[in-house]
Amino acid sequence: MTGAFHSVPIMRPYYCWTVLYVSILAALVLTLNADSKTSECETSIKVRRNTVYQAFVGQDLRINCTVSFCNNTQPVSWFKLENGTDSVSVNKNSHIKTEWKPSDHLEGTSYLIFQKILSNDSGVYRCRSGGSVSHNINILVSGKTSECETSIKVRRNTVYKTFVGQDLRINCTVSFCNNIQPVSWFKLENGTDSVSVNKNSHIKTEWKPSDHLEGTSYLIFQKILSNDSGVYRCRSGGSESHSIKVLVYAAQDTFWSFVYRVVGIMVFVIIVIAIYVTPKRGSKGVCCVGGSKTPPDPPEPSCPASSNSHIYENNESIL
Image 1 (cartoon, rainbow, N blue to C red):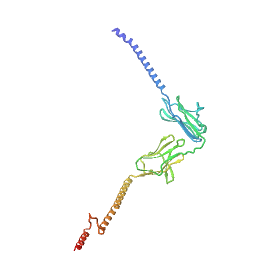
Image 2 (image 1 turned 180 degrees about the vertical axis):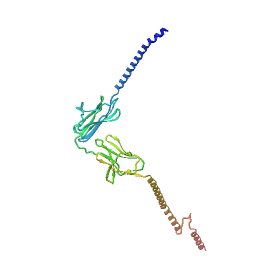
Image 3 (image 1 turned 60 degrees about the vertical axis):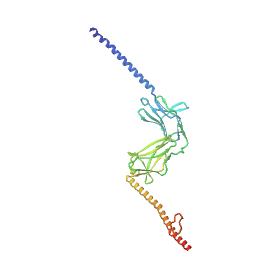
């Protein structure tokens, strides 16, 4: 009994040391795993290869790169390649600015903005963050003024018809010269005065790019109202589209338009039937009158009285 009583305090220290060793080992393993994961993650910068921007002196230009971080957001810097290899940091000044727009907790887009770009701003640019560097972005600045104009494609005499409470989307396709510019919508009042279409609870705008310098702008009416009827146009870069007419009908207009269509179809059918039947009746009357003058075909004699007269004449000749 005494030996058993003394063996308990002897084993307890060994047990405690074992637990301590295991805990330290587990902590080391977790730390190594965390370090390995951190080392494997790198900041990702998305820029298409062979990206080229063209601009004219005095225009505004925005170039961008999308950056995805691992754990924490880091500053993004821009630099310009000199002599093909040497990188010179782009300093912010009166006509060059940078802008950061986050799209997620660990992702966003960095913009390098040229306001009234200069001819010596031509060159190759890159963005850098967290040890990662983007592909080249080539900027070509021409000294001549731009002869290109923004093109807006809308068919002439475009008309949209809808009913109160329905959804409606009207659109215009825009092709830009060098840089994408904002597209605005306005409504013609009194035939000439243009009133800007303000976004509200039931009117929204949407932009869907189809190419680097082309896209479609949508004006969206959600549960359209009767006073939304009118003539609309879109405008961008000094260019303006053709008129787009929107006609909004009330619910009762649907019933009466249906009635008018049915009545019109019935009148048309009656006129066609009358035109078709009347000549046939007239032709039958002519046949009956002409039957007394013109002898019928032998197989189908139509005037038996005339045949009897011939019989009497033959009898007289015999007598």
